[in-house]
Amino acid sequence: MRSLAAALDAAKTTRSRIAKEQALAGAFRELDGPQLATAARIATGRTLPVGDGRSLGVGGSLMTELIVQRTGASPAQVWETARQTGDLGEAFGLLVQEQHEKNGGDPAGAEVSLDDVAAMFDALASTGSRSQKLALLEGVFSRATALETTYLAKVILGSLRVGALGGVTEAAMARAFDVPIDDVRRAMALVTDPGTVAVLAKERRLGEARFELGRPVAYMLATPLEGVVQPLDASAFVLEDKLDGVRTQVHKSGDDVAMFARGLERVTTAFPEVVNAFRAIEGDVALDGELVVMTPDGRPRPFQALQARLRRLAPTEDMLEKTPVTFVAFDMLHDGQGDLLSLPWLERRNAMDRFSGQRGPRAAFLINPAVRLGTEAPLPEQLDRAFEQARARGHEGVVLKRIDAPYDAGRRGQAWIKVKRAFATLDVVITAAEEGHGKRAGVLSDYTFGVWKDDALVNVGKAYSGLTDVEIDQMTQRLEAITLERHGGLRIVKPEIVLEVAFDGIQRSTRHKSGFALRFPRIVRIRDDKAPEDADRLDAVQSLFAAQVETGHREETEALEPPPREPKPPRKKKPKEAPANQLSLFGDPEKRR
Image 1 (tube, rainbow, N blue to C red):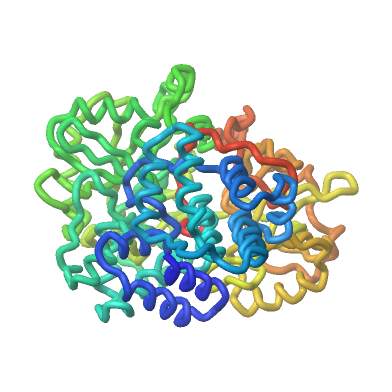
Image 2: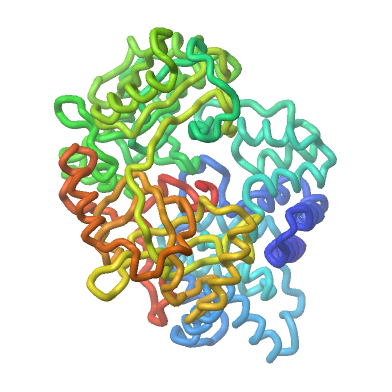
């Protein structure tokens, strides 16, 4: 574990992608088998194999108890240290380091192997007993160095941010074992578990990577229309509605039905109505689609309605009755005999249509319609008309799909093109900024912003896209100069900088003081021509929300599950343990970007 912790620390302290890759490659090269698999998972912020479906069940409260037990610090001291460092894992490592320095160094003979770590992860996920979890943690952390402590705590708490996710770890595998990076990427798209792929790379068996039923494949992604770099031949594409739901894969093998969300987590128990629908179907299959909530007459309800079902391991009877979920399939990945990824979209669609004749209750399993584009009008005119029709049906927009394209797992290419338009733009004021991750580690690239309510700014969202690297570097200098408070990677800043942000909608929020949150905000431009007092007011947000309600794209009722919490300094008091019945439908925030 020591060499991996050192590599992670080296990756964290450099902005150079090559240096990150080299540091991780050095650690991977020393390992093989299960130890290598564990190291590769940890490097990507995971504790268990992709698709495992279990949670460690360790949150801030239990970790704080461990730190107190391990270091002798009081809970108040732990959280004051966490406030200063901006991270509970960093605080744990610092307190252990201070303890070791008092005692003359690391404990004699102390050693934590990656086998010990893997066994601890599995045992934590296999028990619901708090006392047993604490004993398991103590058994490993009592032998860990300060650096090992820091990174073990970070990965357990889901806060491992060293700029080594995704592509960096894949490139590190390629460097470590001298294999082509394209082979690593292909294997990762099919297998999705970094531990399995690392072992295949070391043993030079990447060609054996296969998509299997019951294990998620990386999602194919759509490119925004503005990102298309060549003229489009309308005859080569079909149009589908772009659904406003949660992207999900459903895998059926015999009586076993597994569901995987965008972050590749298993979410099967959260949607029993969909599972029951698929159990009634003959044959085996893997489908790609979206989970949505439908009205009795078949109209999709806005995403807001689905929030009551998110982050629940098992829904209540009341939830099942009030917000029944439908799986709307739009691609077939496996037909029970083998994967269909290499087949053209048209062949996959024909196979899905044949399969759909065997489907169970229509209320829980539908097929997203697809229509061919015509030649009677120019493509822009057809897209404008189709977009407005899709919006009238309650959807986000439309998606163009090339009929001769394979399912390019894990890639965002020109075969799928999403046509969305910003609902509106607002002029907002930056109130806080956070350090980014990956290539943006060390710069302030995530901006929380607000609008005016009377004489105060109230936050309405956070954006991290839209600026160039040069603009982010310049923005970092400006924000550092107006920083009022520092809390780890978070800066509270003077409200001086105005941004114009575009967004796809507005929803109610119980976590923003404004009472609202912008959906998918992105920066259009920096408005240096405007003073902070010229930014929009809450009245404008309220009017835009009311317009959505009128068209049926939002519901007036307040969301039961609010959007992500706006940045705040860590509180000194002991936090509440995350409920054991929560899950993540979206995966790590960095991977969503």
